[in-house]
Length: 148
Image 1 (tube, helix red, strand yellow):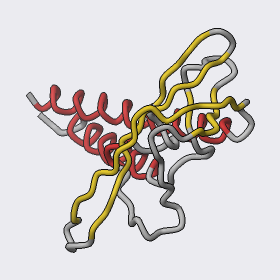
Image 2: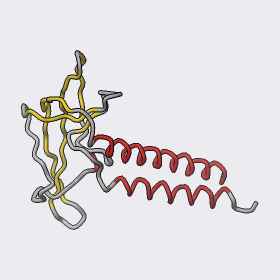
Image 3: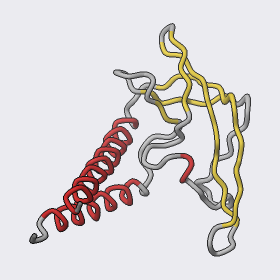
Image 4: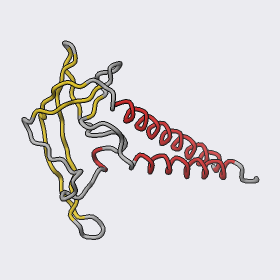
Protein backbone atom coordinates (compact mmCIF):
# COMPACT_ATOMS: atom_id res chain seq x y z
CA UNK A 1 0.00 0.00 0.00
CA UNK A 2 2.75 2.46 0.96
CA UNK A 3 4.62 1.62 -2.23
CA UNK A 4 1.54 2.55 -4.26
CA UNK A 5 1.29 5.93 -2.54
CA UNK A 6 5.02 6.48 -3.04
CA UNK A 7 4.75 5.68 -6.75
CA UNK A 8 1.73 8.00 -7.03
CA UNK A 9 3.68 10.84 -5.39
CA UNK A 10 6.65 10.27 -7.68
CA UNK A 11 4.46 10.22 -10.79
CA UNK A 12 2.72 13.44 -9.74
CA UNK A 13 6.12 14.99 -9.02
CA UNK A 14 7.34 14.05 -12.49
CA UNK A 15 4.21 15.62 -14.01
CA UNK A 16 4.71 18.85 -12.03
CA UNK A 17 8.38 19.04 -13.03
CA UNK A 18 7.58 18.34 -16.70
CA UNK A 19 4.80 20.94 -16.88
CA UNK A 20 6.81 23.53 -14.99
CA UNK A 21 9.99 23.11 -17.00
CA UNK A 22 8.06 23.06 -20.29
CA UNK A 23 6.38 26.34 -19.32
CA UNK A 24 9.71 27.95 -18.43
CA UNK A 25 11.35 26.80 -21.67
CA UNK A 26 8.41 27.81 -23.86
CA UNK A 27 8.05 31.10 -22.01
CA UNK A 28 11.70 31.97 -22.60
CA UNK A 29 11.59 30.85 -26.24
CA UNK A 30 8.38 32.81 -26.86
CA UNK A 31 10.32 36.06 -26.65
CA UNK A 32 11.86 35.24 -30.04
CA UNK A 33 8.85 33.54 -31.64
CA UNK A 34 7.24 34.97 -34.76
CA UNK A 35 3.95 36.77 -34.38
CA UNK A 36 0.79 36.85 -36.40
CA UNK A 37 -2.44 38.78 -36.20
CA UNK A 38 -5.20 37.23 -34.16
CA UNK A 39 -8.79 37.97 -33.24
CA UNK A 40 -10.41 37.58 -29.83
CA UNK A 41 -13.42 35.31 -30.42
CA UNK A 42 -14.59 34.99 -26.84
CA UNK A 43 -13.75 37.21 -23.91
CA UNK A 44 -15.20 37.09 -20.46
CA UNK A 45 -13.99 38.35 -17.12
CA UNK A 46 -14.79 36.15 -14.15
CA UNK A 47 -14.89 37.85 -10.75
CA UNK A 48 -14.76 36.45 -7.23
CA UNK A 49 -13.61 37.39 -3.74
CA UNK A 50 -10.43 35.80 -2.44
CA UNK A 51 -9.98 34.49 1.11
CA UNK A 52 -9.30 38.03 2.34
CA UNK A 53 -12.52 39.35 0.78
CA UNK A 54 -10.70 41.23 -1.99
CA UNK A 55 -12.25 41.10 -5.44
CA UNK A 56 -10.00 39.33 -7.96
CA UNK A 57 -10.54 38.71 -11.66
CA UNK A 58 -9.38 36.33 -14.35
CA UNK A 59 -9.90 36.03 -18.09
CA UNK A 60 -11.66 33.35 -20.05
CA UNK A 61 -10.61 34.03 -23.62
CA UNK A 62 -10.36 32.31 -26.94
CA UNK A 63 -8.54 33.75 -29.90
CA UNK A 64 -8.09 32.65 -33.48
CA UNK A 65 -5.06 33.09 -35.70
CA UNK A 66 -3.58 31.69 -38.87
CA UNK A 67 -0.11 30.51 -39.76
CA UNK A 68 0.38 29.75 -43.41
CA UNK A 69 -2.92 28.39 -44.63
CA UNK A 70 -3.88 26.75 -41.36
CA UNK A 71 -6.23 28.27 -38.76
CA UNK A 72 -5.70 27.79 -35.02
CA UNK A 73 -7.48 28.56 -31.76
CA UNK A 74 -5.72 29.53 -28.56
CA UNK A 75 -6.63 30.30 -24.96
CA UNK A 76 -3.24 30.96 -23.36
CA UNK A 77 -2.39 34.44 -22.22
CA UNK A 78 1.05 33.53 -20.87
CA UNK A 79 2.95 30.37 -20.01
CA UNK A 80 3.32 29.18 -16.45
CA UNK A 81 -0.15 28.98 -14.98
CA UNK A 82 -3.46 27.79 -16.33
CA UNK A 83 -5.90 30.61 -17.04
CA UNK A 84 -8.32 29.06 -14.54
CA UNK A 85 -5.81 29.77 -11.75
CA UNK A 86 -4.56 33.19 -12.82
CA UNK A 87 -6.62 35.40 -10.53
CA UNK A 88 -5.31 38.95 -10.21
CA UNK A 89 -6.18 42.40 -8.99
CA UNK A 90 -7.94 44.33 -11.78
CA UNK A 91 -6.31 47.58 -10.64
CA UNK A 92 -2.86 46.10 -11.24
CA UNK A 93 -0.95 47.52 -14.21
CA UNK A 94 -0.30 43.98 -15.41
CA UNK A 95 -4.03 43.22 -15.74
CA UNK A 96 -4.80 43.54 -19.43
CA UNK A 97 -8.41 43.79 -20.57
CA UNK A 98 -9.42 41.66 -23.55
CA UNK A 99 -12.52 42.40 -25.59
CA UNK A 100 -14.40 40.23 -28.06
CA UNK A 101 -13.56 41.31 -31.61
CA UNK A 102 -10.27 42.95 -30.63
CA UNK A 103 -7.22 42.40 -32.81
CA UNK A 104 -4.24 40.96 -30.94
CA UNK A 105 -0.68 39.94 -31.65
CA UNK A 106 -0.23 36.18 -31.20
CA UNK A 107 3.20 34.72 -30.48
CA UNK A 108 3.45 31.16 -31.84
CA UNK A 109 6.04 28.43 -31.95
CA UNK A 110 7.72 28.22 -35.34
CA UNK A 111 7.94 24.43 -34.99
CA UNK A 112 4.44 23.87 -33.59
CA UNK A 113 2.21 26.82 -34.54
CA UNK A 114 -0.63 25.42 -32.41
CA UNK A 115 1.41 26.42 -29.32
CA UNK A 116 0.77 30.10 -28.76
CA UNK A 117 0.44 32.88 -26.21
CA UNK A 118 -0.63 36.51 -26.23
CA UNK A 119 2.21 37.58 -23.93
CA UNK A 120 5.82 36.42 -23.98
CA UNK A 121 7.68 35.03 -21.03
CA UNK A 122 6.28 32.98 -18.18
CA UNK A 123 4.38 33.64 -15.00
CA UNK A 124 6.36 33.49 -11.76
CA UNK A 125 3.65 31.10 -10.51
CA UNK A 126 5.40 28.37 -12.52
CA UNK A 127 7.81 28.11 -9.60
CA UNK A 128 4.92 26.97 -7.38
CA UNK A 129 4.43 24.04 -9.77
CA UNK A 130 8.11 23.20 -9.54
CA UNK A 131 8.06 23.53 -5.73
CA UNK A 132 5.02 21.25 -5.54
CA UNK A 133 6.95 18.73 -7.64
CA UNK A 134 9.83 18.93 -5.18
CA UNK A 135 7.56 18.31 -2.19
CA UNK A 136 5.84 15.39 -3.92
CA UNK A 137 9.21 13.90 -4.91
CA UNK A 138 10.47 14.21 -1.34
CA UNK A 139 7.30 12.56 0.01
CA UNK A 140 7.53 9.78 -2.57
CA UNK A 141 11.17 9.01 -1.78
CA UNK A 142 10.51 9.12 1.98
CA UNK A 143 7.60 6.69 1.65
CA UNK A 144 9.58 4.46 -0.69
CA UNK A 145 12.46 4.15 1.77
CA UNK A 146 10.38 3.48 4.89
CA UNK A 147 11.50 0.32 6.63
CA UNK A 148 9.19 -2.64 6.52
